[in-house]
Image (cartoon, each protein chain N blue to C red):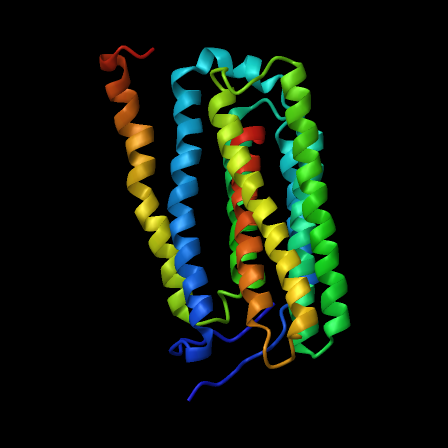
Length: 192
Length: 98
């Protein structure tokens, strides 16, 4: 897993990647604010927390977490494929990412439906921050799948190549960040 | 002059660690002792996040500027965390909260 660290200036052609990292830095602050609302709710309503947590299904969400982590793996596989000039392998790996992204959203929809059936709605004490935080994350996954569709369709018009694949790299940065957010949410909301 | 270094990380190994850690986290969540559960879960989540950042997002090999931008976001988030975890619980009772 070793790679030499390079501390070189950012090449001009990587300006969009720089923009992507600035965006991700902003997203860190945005998601921290959201997550903190949940932390505060837990702190001031400790008495209701156990009741809320009894509605959460850890095994289902653990599987969903595995699905998202797996999708991240397929993103790096796609990037490696195009770096080696294998556009077909890139497409198949990205198709797997798309399928896994939708599977994750399906899992979240199933969880939400189960919670609604059990009376946990947006209007409840923990429902408000829970649905806001997980919903915002889910929206990011959904936007990611739309972006991926755009990437795949765009590839048919102007194909990505061994030399020109920054579009895949930028999408990957976004997708991996969304994965990191879920790693944090999974621990904070469901496990602790 | 920029020198490209593309020694490919073992992505499957990273993925394997992430998957195994997810399984361990899930099992640990059923442990009732908070003294064990809390630090283990926090460390596992942090290690997972760092692995994704370093290897999947290539911060280990990319320009340091990208790392600084991510760290800047984290630093800006610290006051938010302090306000919510330290200041708000002190202020809320005086505002009529529980």
